[in-house]
Amino acid sequence: MSPVTDGDGAEEESDLEPDSEEYVGDVLEVVAAIPPGRVLTYGDVAGVVGRGGPRQVGQVMARWGASVPWWRVLQASGRPARGHEERALAHYAKEKTPLRPDGERVDLRLARWVPEF
Image 1 (spheres, rainbow, N blue to C red):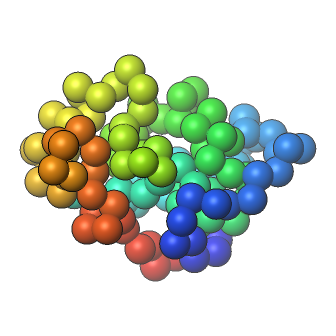
Image 2 (tube, rainbow, N blue to C red):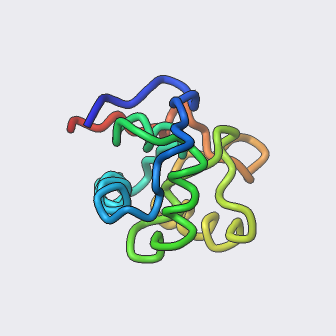
């Protein structure tokens, strides 16, 4: 796996099968390793995995993400997955994840995790 990028611009591969067992396993492994109070964007996860992009990671999370701390994977804006905001914010409060002043987005400058894979 390659190191995390400093943005959300991981290259997308249109021929990538987001439901391949290997890809799903790699994405879920990265997400499971994110410590409490820390986060990665969908693009960050793709960068760590070394293939795919934010959309492929989002597809994996939508289908199989319930088994890992899904709330620790965010949009590039720092917002949690749509439709899960209330539950995610409760997790952020419990884990003391730094939020932006609006209280609706995670402060990526403070909370972004840099994995050591």
